[in-house]
Image (tube, rainbow, N blue to C red; front, side, top):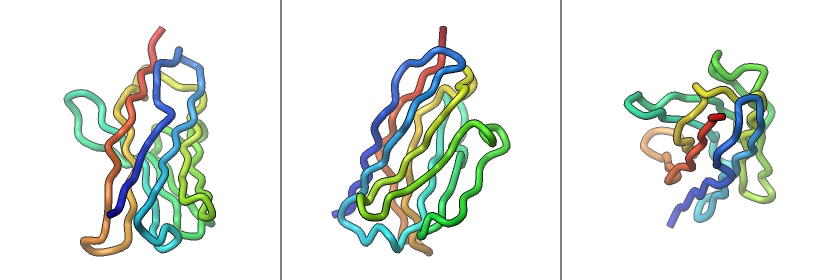
Length: 117
């Protein structure tokens, strides 16, 4: 059974930092590209960052470029999202997704990030 478990969310002041983790099990991790998405209250889900299977390339939403960094450790079956200079508009539930192609994709349950003074 495939499981993706996010952690690291919480309450942080504007300008602060958080590091999210997503631990995967039940799949051959290195065969999956990995994404971070987020969903703010009353809004649709937004792709925040994506990383290739080997971790050699990544893309970011314009709203987080220069502030967020996605990375992965295939030996630990884990991806990370380092979030710096957080803003109130970054407040959302953050989800990780494993993408294997076609219908072969999986989601975590999400972790709440709240940026507020």
